[in-house]
Image (cartoon, rainbow, N blue to C red):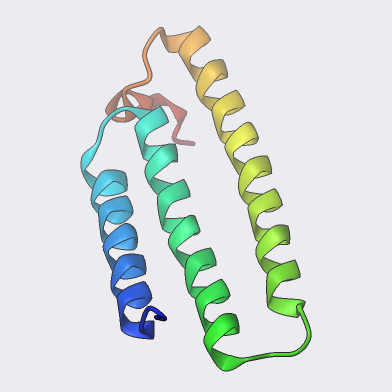
Length: 103
């Protein structure tokens, strides 16, 4: 028994919506970064699902997905480093208090 394509797309849409809601409504910078990662993972899920259902012989979409996961890991590392640097200066990770960073 195979799972239909629309179930995967619905799961991806829900993941993206949860990530978008978290990124727009939360004030904690670390939670905002986690919500962006959830949105990124929903895009990777779409890539893999369309590769599976389309029936490509070459594993090119899988390689792109692995590359995207590596980019997401690097993005998380840089984002967390920025949050730690801001926390050391302002003693807070509240996004609304970062207004002094504007140029």
